[in-house]
Length: 397
Image 1 (cartoon, helix red, strand yellow):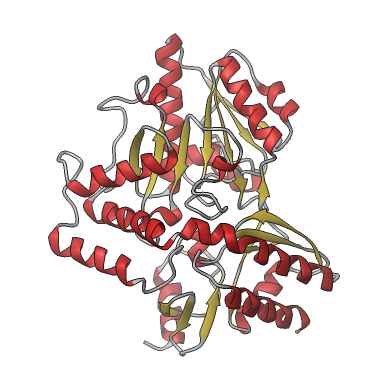
Image 2: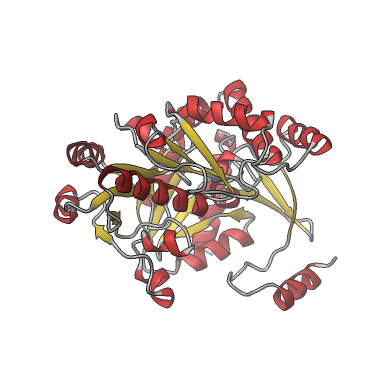
């Protein structure tokens, strides 16, 4: 199908909830994607931080093909081997205890909220508990996830949302303290805010929130949907902060393209929250999804993916800092590992993205003025250098 035909058909039949760029991606190899016209793009978006292993990883592809030939779906009324092994690997990587697999990050947030509310309900038999979330956060687009997303733009058309949500300021511990009361059952935040503009949590802030949770028997929910699975230079970003959540959500690179998410609980919450009948999913944790998770963890270990990110991150940050120093329209860089943002001023970040795409580079935005770079975790120094040169051309055009 020709490019213009594919675009026209999509616009005719697919609900217009995305303003898509006018290219039709066809296939990928390594850290490059190719459109239906044959044009090559260096991919520093990775399907919004999903395709951590790059395109065409033979081990990953063969694991999925083998599972397709065996069985794709059974329902959660039965056991299957990939489910237990995937849960064991995720629990081991996080040092936590119990896993519930979902189809997406948004669904993982929904489950985490329900687990926190059930924990508090069993503790004191009240049903009016409250959750503290962060301003400028993003946790998903379902009604529950929207309720803890600190951005009125996303919320306003869909009010009223679930009640009992209070908002504090990210990296401001006093603002969190001010929102705590006897009804507070959980505090939810991204370890590194993504859609809000690439803001890493400050160490003293996160440790302070953990201490407040311990003091008041409040559950700490850390959203690692985007920043987890090696992207920060640790398997999970919170592992750099000397804290541990009570509930963690993850998705995106967990399946590296297969739709899968999870919420992971420590022993205390797992033994005192959700029971049969409280939560469920038809597709979550099916054999195909779990085969993807198992392959991802095996490849991460064999190819030392997390170590590679940690080793190469200083070079990526150095080159981005050099770029910022060269152009007046770039204000600052912030981020961790392979989750980086560049603040753009005095020109549209959308224009920069369009120019980058024209120059064969895929990047995306975060918030209104941040250029977001979340490449596959297998990029090399040469890929970073090429990205910098393409960004220079985009900024100068």
